[in-house]
Length: 138
Image 1: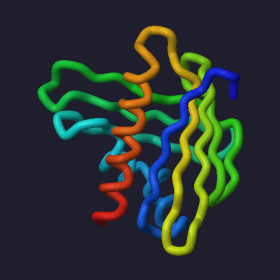
Image 2: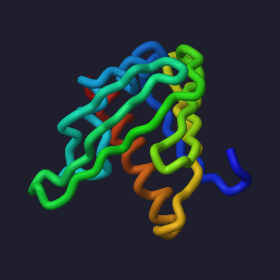
Image 3: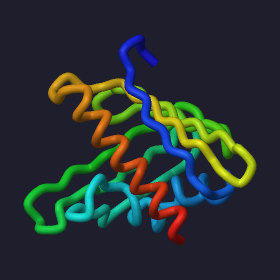
């Protein structure tokens, strides 16, 4: 991570095994990888291993906009850490910390230069909050 990075986190009321599964399985990724209810993730692919690739399509439900979020894994430590580089070269680290029957998910990413950092933090936090809601509700 560079000096300039943003961290978001959430504590999910589920054991780390379930959190890991829901974070990484494409059928689950499609259930949470978007920031608001007027968006969805119609497609997800994930090859969870070092040098494996992933891609998730995030799209407005009204069809007005969509984009693919993807990259390459640089580190995968089962039930603990995932590190990857996004297509634009920015680095991301996700840590999974088991705390009894809860799991703290801590996501740190390098911001892009186009949007204000608070907006980026808000967007990533909204997706993480959606992940928490989805995982706890299933």
